[in-house]
Length: 124
Image 1 (cartoon, rainbow, N blue to C red):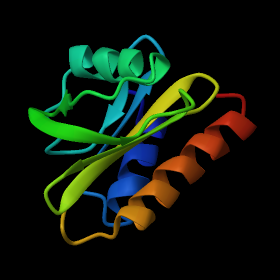
Image 2 (tube, rainbow, N blue to C red):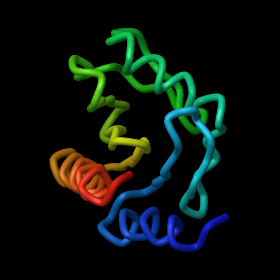
Image 3 (cartoon, helix red, strand yellow):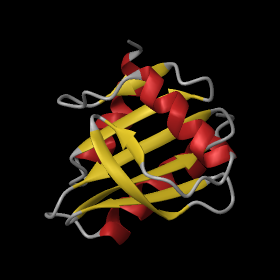
Image 4 (cartoon, one colour):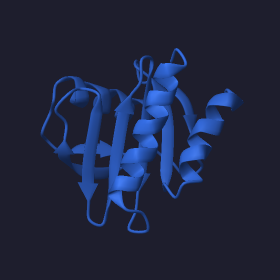
């Protein structure tokens, strides 16, 4: 694993996000936080779900999430109980954050989307 990418996953967990990851647009894993059991296959399905504006439930890290927002192919919001998932695409990457009841959804959305924008601004 590339340590510089790992720093981005850690940056998200340092902001209170329970599980974080960065993938390529092909679903290849660039970095993943400790305790994130999600698979590359789940990342690929999430990417397909986003590009097709899917409305069904999606599984990530073995958890099933209800689709809350998935309209533009760039940002996805999912919910499960008091927690949820945010995914945002940059130019070349997919940033994913999973939050629990200890974090407000908006905080996860901001952290994930800001990182995706930062990566886009820096050529990724």
